[in-house]
Image (cartoon, rainbow, N blue to C red; front, side, top):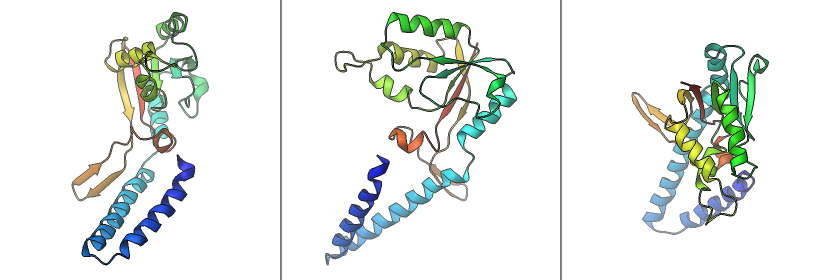
Length: 204
């Protein structure tokens, strides 16, 4: 979606200009409200960049809390963690995407999980869309077992529990009052690059 943002901005500006030329009091109110909302949302989003990147925070936590030599499961088609000193750990890639959701795939994943001490989900790049593709009657490419895997993982039914989470959201703070907007359900390009939500699970 990012490539079309400049065109959407131009269209919004043109539409706002046309509305402001209408000689009614309500149009001035609408124009002011639109500009105010745009300013507030922009300020909230910019606040993301005043905070430490979640991948850096997660890397620091990993280096401080996960013993050297531990086996860490990471997701296929996502960024690996930690960002540096990764050679101190044994990474295992889980093929959650790109393969048929069949028994062979899940036998491989079970074997890898049995020998894994930690699972790192570095963004919502996989778990959000794949959980939506669980209905094989509706979708040709479906992942019902993968959706079940995520459900069990998040509910501590796989023998792992969440021990750390790193997230940064658009926010507005005025004194002791704070407003945060959870934008993890937005389009992937909107979150996974500059402020992905990261979860770390440990075998129990």
